[in-house]
Every structure is written in C-alpha cells, then in structure tokens.
Amino acid sequence: MGMKRHNLKAIVTATAIFAGVCQPVLAQTADLTDERTLLAQLAHAGAEAAPRLDRQLQAIWNRSGSAAMDFLLKRGRDAMDRGDFAEAVEHLTALTDHAPEFAEGWFMRATAYYNAGLYGPALSDLEHALTLNPNNYDAIFGLGTLLETFGNPKLAYEAYGRARALNPHHEETIKAMDRLKPAVEGKAL
Image (cartoon, rainbow, N blue to C red; front, side):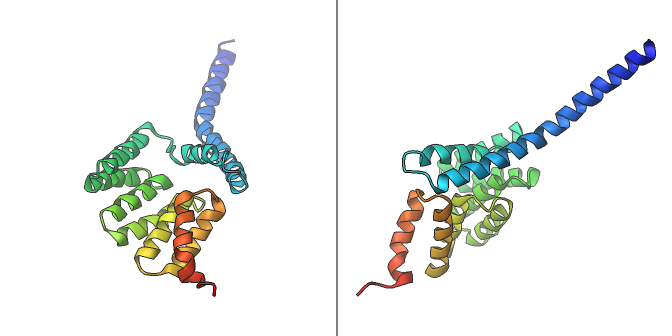
C-alpha cells in the first residue's frame, strides 16, 4: 500500500509539473489562433468593429508572459509619454535583454529611438520586431514612417499599404497613404 501511495504522489506531482510547464505553451497557441482570427476579422471589419478588434490584438501583443517584463514595458511607455526617450530606451533595453522573443519590446524601443532621432537603431529594432511579429501593423507603419524620413516615398507607400491591408481602419496609415499617393502614383490630368 505504501508503494502505491508513493507512485500516486509521483504521478500527481508529475502531472502538476507537466500542467505548469505546458500551460504557457497552450496559452501561446491559443493566442496565435486568436491573433489569426482577429487579424482576419479586422481585415474585413466595418468601422464600428475595428477599434474593438484592434484593442484585442494589442492585448495579445502586449502580453509578455511575465509580470516583470510587462512592468518594464509599462515603465518604458510611461517614460515616452513624459518625453524622456533616454529613460524609455533604458527600460526597453532591459526588456529586450531579458525577453528577446517579445516583439512588442523591440517595437517600443524602436519607437523610443525614433523619437530620440536615432533612426539607425530604430530601423534595426523594427526589423527585429517584424521578424518576431510580421503582422504588427503599427510596426509596419513605423517602418513606413522611417522610409519616408529617409526620403523613399515609394517604399514608404508600400509599407503603409501592407499595414493598411492588415488594418484597413488604421487612421495614421490612411493619412500617410493619402499624403504620398500623388508623389508615388502621379497626379491625374
């Protein structure tokens, strides 16, 4: 009887450990499924549903899986809100160092670099962010903004077009495309 009780405890312990290890993996799989579904819905959504779908996608993309990493993201964003881009870069560098697979950390640091006028590091971080999450239309918009800053309206317009294909209601993208359209497509006679 003692042997069976020991085996039962071992099985329960192993099951608990397995569930604890697999739960984040299962949650990530659910998030990916949710992300695909939400992106498909957003691409065809009306103006009324788009903000809700955008918020849901942002909630998925902003979740690192770690309270400490989420705190670093918040600290970085708070610093950017105050206009302290050097402090934002510090917090977001800590985030990317400790959570290199978290795309939002790279995107937010790219945003901080851009706002600090450091375009090379911003471009590098955007590349990294888009490698990790190629569907982040905000990051694609950021790439378009950088390309426009570099004086390449054609490539910027293409990037904006990709962002708009993912989120047809992204207001900044719509404005940017309208602004660049005459330069890229020419003027009607």
